[in-house]
Amino acid sequence: MTGTQQQAKISFQKVRRVYDVGQGTFEALGGVDLDIADGEFVTVVGPSGCGKSTLMNICAGLETASSGTVTVDGVKVSGPSPQRGVIFQQYALFPWLTVRRNVEFGLRLANISRAERRERAEHFVDLVGLSGFIDAYPRTLSGGMKQRCAIARAYAVNPSILLMDEPFGALDALTRVSLQDQLLQTWSADRRTVMFITHDVDEAVYLARRVVVMGKQPGRIVDIIDVDLPYPRTEEVRLSPEFAQLRGDVWRAVYHQPPAEAQSRRHTA
Image (tube, rainbow, N blue to C red; front, side, top):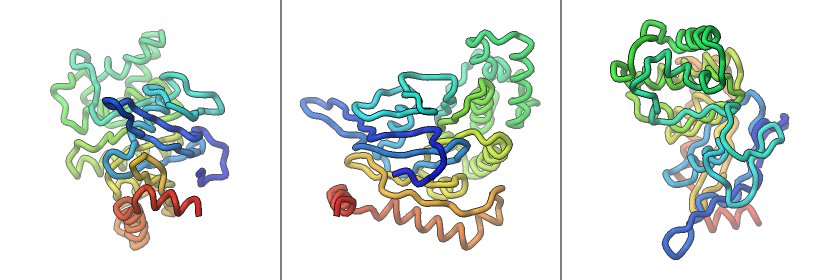
């Protein structure tokens, strides 16, 4: 199930993930096929336990598929890579480092010169609106500011792909909307490939070109919905009848799924 005619940047091919549980097994992913085009913004939404995060972790190289493959630019993923920046809901900042030093961290590991590290850090800290806090420590920052720092750190190493696992899930509604807009502004400027995991239907529709809807038992794709709304996304877009229609389509796909057995019969009929 690809949903796009463009050259795939990321390709999931029959990806299964099975865990040993006690004396039995649990199938978290049941053979996922998905292509994501270069420069595309895709959101993945579905009920709790459907394998959204597992799918992203396999793409990040943090987990291994039980069978099937994930490729990036045609090369099989076999572990983490600076090419794939990962941003989690938990900010994962180093509390003993300032905003600047947190953003520079990956650059230091890559042996980037001090002058270039400083230049890149200042650029991306400014890009996410934290230039006034560049020498602050994480304990002095709000949740939204910490997440913006984490986003700047991911961008600083210049990944071609951003993998984001519910990055705004722990934030208040106003901060969440602000960061959604900021993320889209940044994406519009450089068109990196984004795979964004969320449990929020409004967020999934507002951000994406395509919304991938997953079901569980086992984790699988049950629908892919094209979002034919213009960029830049604005408050007018969010309040439009077209947005409401798409939101309803995704909501029904997420919350009115047939049992796995019925879904399987539908696809094989």
